[in-house]
Length: 107
View 1 (cartoon, rainbow, N blue to C red):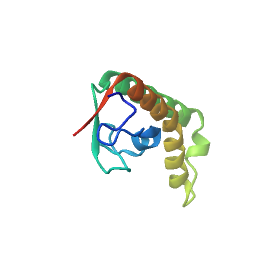
View 2: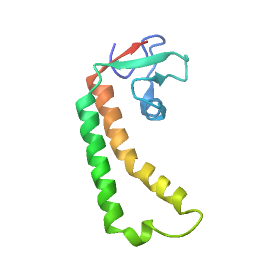
View 3: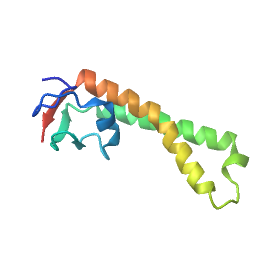
View 4: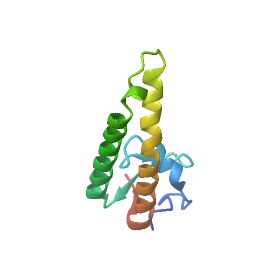
């Protein structure tokens, strides 16, 4: 098996199943409802991506303080949405790495 196909039903799990998982080690494949996990999981690469993401988020907040500190009821939702949108490229990168370098197995 490889990192792209479910070991139970042998169908491609896609990138969205990895991105929708709360934790990348707890993937629930929607087709056959099986719990999947990647082995070995690249913890070092994930930690580096998280550190770069947090540094980038902090830099953007510091550079654009007037935009982020607005007294408006929807400001918090906009800030959370921005933080989530900023994380998407990192998550896509990690999903591509997992699919190419790790082996997908059932829990």
